[in-house]
Length: 157
Image 1 (tube, helix red, strand yellow):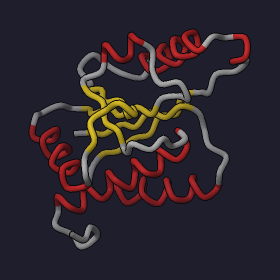
Image 2 (spheres, one colour):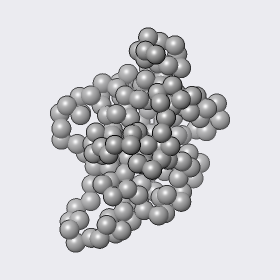
Image 3 (tube, one colour):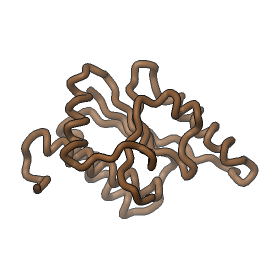
Image 4 (cartoon, rainbow, N blue to C red):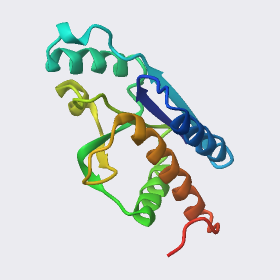
């Protein structure tokens, strides 16, 4: 199975870039992992929130296949602790899907079409984080999940 993380816009923050790259490199020891960055929208002041979500949705749809399992990182999604998230990842690996795609949305969430296409939603916390921070938090949690599945001494209970 491959895991793809679709991100909305690049980050310029060095500490996020360094942290994300660290976990991205670590993940490659466990699973095929790819990151796709869709470009941030320009001239958003001329667009309504719905128009922004629609345009971001179109960019997301260009990156996914019909056979992909699509999971949105969304504040209204299901919450997991690290152990149950690792069990979720194992369940996906056992299901035979080829590509598990997680998407970090823009500041206003996702379009209705993206929500309809999604196979699930996950929330990283009841707190709200910038979509820049979510990329780092998600990469760390995915790495943690892989170490839990391999019984490696990264996660402490």
